[in-house]
Image (tube, rainbow, N blue to C red; front, side, top):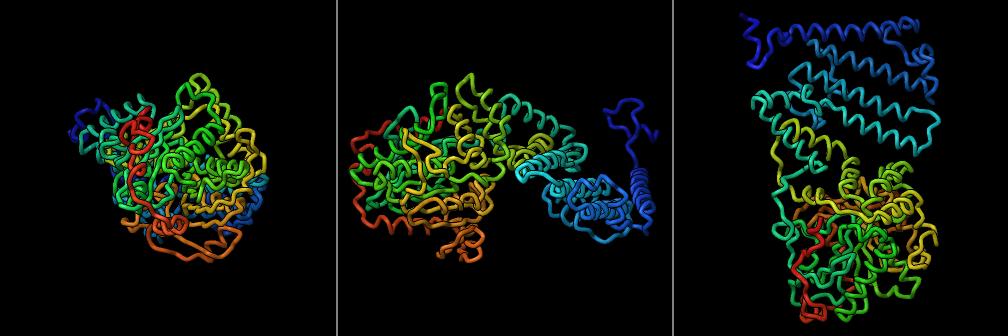
Amino acid sequence: MAEQETKGPGAAAGAPPLPTLEEMQHWTWVMGRAQQMMLEHVAKAAGEAKPPQPDALARQLPWMSMFPDPAKLAEQQVELWTEGLAIWQRALGLETPRTGIEEKADKDRRFSAPQWRENPLFDMIRQTYLLVSERLLGSVDALDGVDPKQREKLKFLTRSFVDAMSPSNFALTNPLVLERAMETKGESLLKGLEHMLADLSKGQLTHTDPNAFEVGRNIAVTPGKVVKRTPLYELIQYSPTTDLVHETPLVIFPPWINRFYILDLNPKKSFIQWAVNQGLTVFMVSWKSADATMKDVVLDDYVLGGQRDAIDTIRDLLGVGHVHAIGYCVAGTTLACTLAWMAAKGEAEKVASATFFTAQVDFSEAGDLNLLVADETLEMIDRISAEKGFLDGRYMAATFNLLRGRDLIWNYVTSNYLMGDDYPPFDLLHWNGDTTNLPATWHTAYLKDFYKGNKLVTPGGISVGNVPIDLRKVETPTYVQAGREDHIAPAHSVWKITHHFAGPLKFVLAGSGHIAGVVNPPEAQKYQYWTNHSKVATLDEFVAGATEHKGSWWPDWIEWIGARSEKKVPAKGARIPGKGKLKALEDAPGSYVRAK
């Protein structure tokens, strides 16, 4: 009768009952005792009192000689055994001092819920996982005779594996998932399965409520007009909000690998709206998501048919001699090419100033993305994009998610699939999932010539319109912003632009990363930024002598722009979208940003 009561309504006849707490404690003791016996065996073989000393352990285990410092590795193994034994002892209910692993487990948000600590079994699981993970990652550093780039690749792959194998990612080893399943009588698992099947159908992980945002309705809503459309881009002119505007307009080149509205998420976060409110006449280039007609698009098209064409269009529309230009991420890389091309052709005066948001020109230390441009990866990209003539944007989205797999993949596997949570409305994640396709020929060339070949920093290594590109010829006043925690364009990589341009340059290091470090409106009063007016050679020297400023760097930038654009003119005539020689084609944000 008692056995029948332990069975749930769906239990099969004869199914074994769940183990009692006493039984789990017994098996925990068995495993702990086994580990202790192995430790004592090694100590005995080494002729030492337990625990064994690292140097003796290194002598007894010849395979450790493959590592550059066998004694150091042995020390790590002793620590592994010692901390592992402490974990088993705590699972048995024995009093032991808190270890570093236990403290790390409490701080790790994957395991911070009280359910992980309160149940001895799950507490043991989380600590053992972190302990083994730490040693796996440490063993990569201990390998001897490995090329530094190969070592970084091994670390990336090991970290990706470790993140994937977290017990929080599996239903049976996550107490929160089990608790939710019991509370909902399995409905949470069905809902999670529904989420997973929907994602499999569309070929992309969902991060946010897909119906919460709509471009032009509650996202990308700064008023303006599309005043030009080409096969490559739409040019959006935004409506002024001040009676007087700076005579020199601003054109923004966003990355063609993303939608431009990262700079126009909503009125409170919009850099575009903020810049308009500062009295700038703002233009935005909205790149077309690639289709089969763009299979032969190359660097020349983005530089000459894109950036230079937009600059000349704005100059002619407003009757001005020059513009301020911003290049974000990869569009900053091509902006550097555009500036060098203009310098070579005697057109440098067309750009009064250039601002670079987290942009790289020297890819020698470009971070984890460099690990994804191996020959086999490039061959795979060629294969999957050859038939259509473009690379499906979902592949690029998956690549960027992989760089932060713990946050952008496994976090959502747990919440969406295992917990069955409702999707939260989050504008940034909506943008992150709104992918753009990439021209196949150009995308492969970009990876080969810039990331893999690092040709841009070699004078003449890259040519545009048969003009050799030499960054040393760029004398345009430049403002460079980098993100301290940027994992896509690392700050030390962005810094290298200071070594290649010849003109006056201001470097600003912003708090946070590739997105939040850029999209940080002053009203939010978040993060900080650093400036250093001394001439220094390295980013470390810059940081050592830098002054920290609380909040957004945007006011610093507009002050810098204002010093180069002091004259103001009435906001009328061609300064009103559609009232000049270029008539309005449609309201902002246009058609290209909506095209899939």
